[in-house]
Length: 415
Image: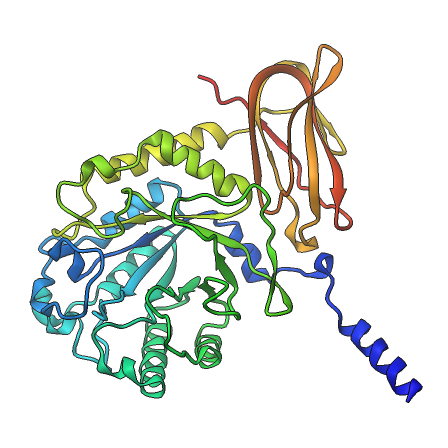
């Protein structure tokens, strides 16, 4: 008996997980390097001045006369987005592709005499402009009567997943939004198996409390703000998993779909930059919600704001100050340089280790602390009062294990 207890204890120790040992997959590393994406909401709600469709809208309302997926993708790219997620089916159940498994789709709309395919047009535009393509398929369905039967609806949902996973090329991400799904029992194991079968490299997004098997987690709000201490590894159902945070926020405050006369809700450039610093600048992914109008075009004001945002990010972080030399985690300048921000990154192939750090600048031959923080992860942006310095260094004060930092980058954002 004693031998058996010792054996079981040794076996438990063998399989015990250590936070510092968890590593991301190559696909997760590649996804985190994308940093900025967009989430496109478009459907019957667009034509009915609604955010939440109830599944009763006549497909005839969907009739954009100028739909231009190229315009959407160009605007996203101008904002600095490297991937696009299209809402192929929202909670109202209306499908933006001609699904074989329901008539509630574009094939029953007057748009292109029922022969159109929004998913196909957006996917092709993304490929032409070099954006990775992802799909959002709402598990909640307020139209289809099969939703009342768990087994029948799982068959339906898995069939639609298969359609989308086999018709539109490689997917970078697949969204499962948990809104409105309380009380419904989903076969998540089947969903994951379906996606892994046809899209083994696609990453599955869901909130932690909705689906335990995902690759990406919701940040927990729609304001575009990640916590200052942001870990990629989470303890979910007693299992440690690498599950980085994605922070989604609409370009127009409170509106995922387009609504008439809502231009005043368009977020300012200053708001977008604050969001950028609180998401990408804290190691999370930023996803901006964009919404074509009832013409099928992004409003001109939205396009302009996206362009302004992308230009400002490039202005601030496009080109770091060139150092005269480096030694370890220290950057040297041959002459004093004006600077006000630093970008730090961990090499995630070795995991996320930093728990606490500080940044110092060499001012008048003295090392002065200019900023400090907790986690670093994929990226950490520190903005501080401008100083004139001949060097910058980062000092790790606490870590989970051996730290592997990428070369730090120093910038001056002042005009």
